[in-house]
View (cartoon, rainbow, N blue to C red):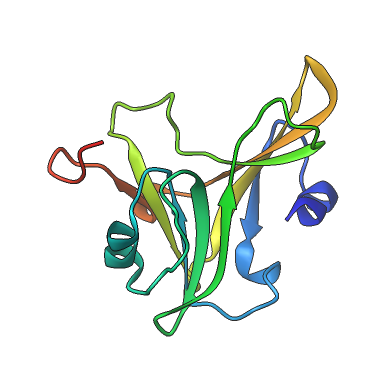
Length: 148
């Protein structure tokens, strides 16, 4: 994802990315899920079994025919030595509509947004904010959903 964004996107600008063009595997649905979910909650959303312990970090899960075909967790550590950091953007600063619980991106509409942002305090660090294209991809937490 970093290579694609570096080649096709500009810093501080929303960049529309067709995620199906940069994934080397087949998938039906991409889920981007915030931290704090247990395995049963994740299974109820994605409709597939996930065996990894997943309650601590944000995650990206690709599902094909009811099976997880790719899973990755993201730990955001601003002080890490990494020059490129992927941040799953759950729009914490804009909560008037409710907190975002997860994104659901179907293969038929595989666009997401990547926004590259430099860190003025650290010259060589670039953040890649991964977020939804529109509100249809977003599931927000209604009052009756989950209690954190």
